[in-house]
Image 1 (cartoon, rainbow, N blue to C red):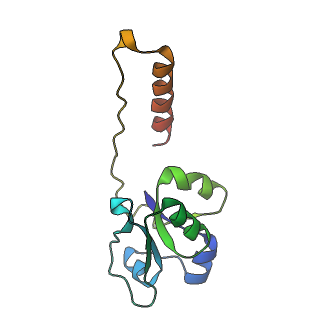
Image 2 (image 1 turned 120 degrees about the vertical axis):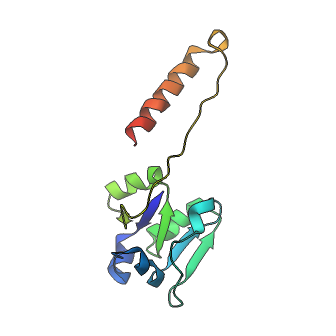
Image 3 (image 1 turned 60 degrees about the vertical axis):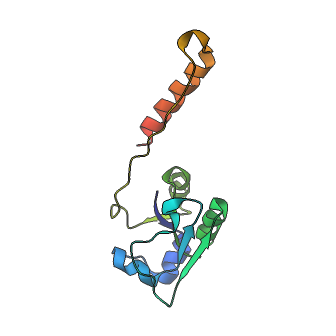
Length: 129
């Protein structure tokens, strides 16, 4: 995940150039994702934070220009490409690698379409790096 905001929010509140500047911005957190509501700075009194346990609402609030949020890059990337979102403080945070595993039956019990599906997803995730 990375930090993102709508261009309208950044035009109104400014674009932070350093992590410390996040304390003066409204932050949108996601309590359903363990790291989604933890921020690397103490929040300022003038802006605060909105926390929800609904990922769709986090995305809606961010797209609506209400603040900066941590979004899964797979979700945000197409919205960045269309100009609806802008990465914030790109390169300031280490992105942990999250392993994805496929568990399947032994080869003799596996349908060919299962192998084809897993091969497709493995190639797709590899290109997303």
